[in-house]
Structures are given as structure tokens and as C-alpha cells.
Image (cartoon, rainbow, N blue to C red; front, side):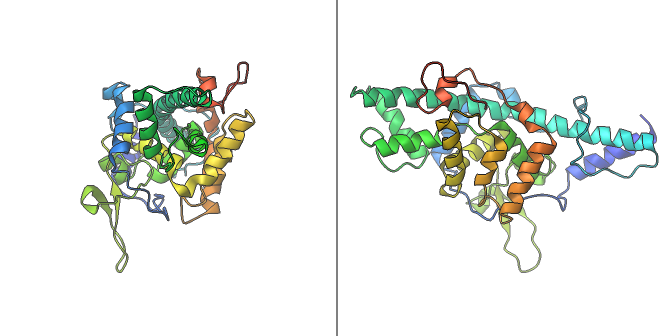
Length: 323
């Protein structure tokens, strides 16, 4: 490694430990109180179903990144003295981006896999109820807990509206959408809130005593961002937020329409429902969509094995949907 290479990578390490001006923690919405037991239980169940040594790690930016994929130019290029140096710098940037995406995408898939299982069970129980079957006590309790977790006020045992509402909420979030937001909100994993609190999505803490404070200019109110026990926990919380908060009803409606027409879920389309995620509004939506497009994040999606669980009351032979 040349002296220039050494200097570049040491400089990158310093940047990781600092808050930069490009960090996107400008959410104009205070999320729900996800310190509730329902969120912790949801995230804990996902963590328990996976390798705990993999789901509770922190980023190790000293590891060698994956081989770069050419043509990605979203990240700003550092200064270079020659064409060769410029190519090396660009390759290193792309490698770090690929490392980020390949580290986060399996964690998103794990949450989506758990949601797919829940959706499959929900569809089975709804079918039984529609056939006037009496559910077992454990299934009744499970439905009641599910409704509480997803903020559905009516009883799904007796209300058709409640069942339909659950179907619109208990569903996956496209991996490309989650990756784009994670990169934007965490400044590619370099933010202090990721390094100290595993907070990938800029979720605000309801209890300042349990959050990480952000330095503000004189006269501005200090904000606190929530700490998570793992990156997996942060992702589970983010997906539960999109699936249950009233502000993201437009996103769920877009997803429901795609399901009804047996269309694959698309991160760029669902991003249109994020108008209230940031004070930037439509500009933020454009940023997310550009991130997905420029980095070809749809390549991280895949077709799940549980096709029926992912569709709206699917029938045999219906096409599968991308996750």
C-alpha cells in the first residue's frame, strides 16, 4: 500500500467517527413510541431466529470491502493527482458502498422473512374466519396481539374491516427502499448514531435519557436519537414504523394496490408514500428514488418462496411477487 493509499484510508476512518454535513437526520415527524413491548418483542423474535453473532455486530470498516461494481457515481470523489489515483479512489468509494449494501440487505431480508410468515398465518386465519370456523385460543390471542402491534383498533375476530387493515399492514418493505433510506439517513453508516446506537434510520427517542443527543446551534432545541441493541433491531423498528404509523398510509395504499394487481413490490414506487418521512417532502422522495436507481438497488430484491403469503388472498397459480 502506497503512502497515498494509507493516508486515504486513515482519513476515511476519521470521517467515520465524525458527524458530517451530509448526514440526513431531518425527519419532520416524531415517530410512535416504539419503546413499547410490542416492538421489542417483534425485533427480539427476529433476532432469535437468526445468528446472533451476525445480527448484533457493528460495522467493521477496517475489513476489506467486496469487489467494486463499476458505474456507480453517487458518492463524491476525493481529490486525486493523476488518472490512476482517481481510479483507485473511485474504486475504494464504490467498494465501501457495496460493503454497506451487502451488509444491510441480509438483515432486511430476515425481517421480511418473518413478516412473510406472519402474513401467511394471518391469511390462513382470515380464511378460516370467513368459513365460520372457530379459531383455537392461541390463534385468537395471536390475532389480538397482532392488531395491537399494528395499531388496528377493531377486533379482527369480528370485524372484516380490521382483517383488511391487518392485511394492508402486515407486509414486507422492499429491500431496495430500505437500503436507500438506510444509506441516506445514516450517511452510509458513518453517523455517530449508527456507531453508538445502531440507529440506521434517524429514529428520534421519546425518552431523552435513553437517546443520543445531537449538537444544535445556539437557540435550537436539542434532539435525541434512539439507541438500538443491534442493526437488526433498528431495521425491525423501521419496518414496523412504515407498516403502522398513520403518516405512512399512502405507502401502504400503494403496496396494497400492487398486491391486488399481483405486481412486484418496487421501492421507487413505494417511496412516493414517504412524503411525511422528512421535512424535505418531495425532494426527499426524489433522493430516495435516485439512490435506488443510481445504485441499481433492485438487484438486492428476490422472489420469496412464500408467494401465497405475500399476495392478497392469493389463489393457486398466481404469480409470485418480488421482495
